[in-house]
Amino acid sequence: MTTTTQVLPLPAPRAWDLVADARNHARWVPLTRVDVADGYVVAVTGPRARRGGGGLVDRMRVDRFDPPQGDAPGVAEFTKVGRVLRGTARIEVVALGADSARVSWTESVHLAGPVPAALTRAAAAPFLALMVRRALRLATSEARQDEAHHL
Image (spheres, rainbow, N blue to C red):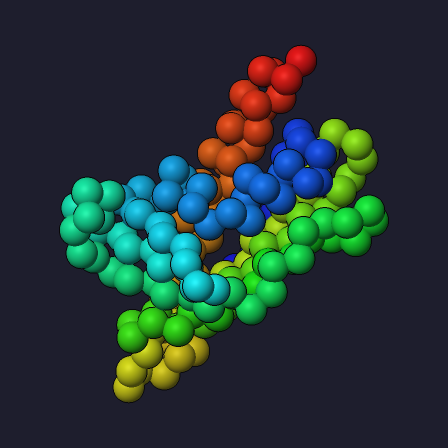
């Protein structure tokens, strides 16, 4: 399991809209397209994925999608139900004040199949950590640009 935390210079509802909407993740994860429909998120990663080609499919069921309300954090939870990738993902957005929010993104991923989940989870963790750090860094950059336009 890997968790990455980043403070975004946005009010919690706007930070939530940015990071919890999985369609935005395609901008931050290289070679990836994301579709959302009927309570599922399907991310496809591969050299031609953004042009409609195939690749590694990450199919996730949306189990919880509660935006932040007042002092209550926003929480999105997903279960990976694909033929290759299994596990969970969680995004939490907590207001730190009127103009900032802490985003915590947790991924626990393993491969389906005969290899023990603990082994493939450990092998995947460094790649997931890089991917999530990159995604949150780019989301933060977008948030700063968004805030500059709102001044």
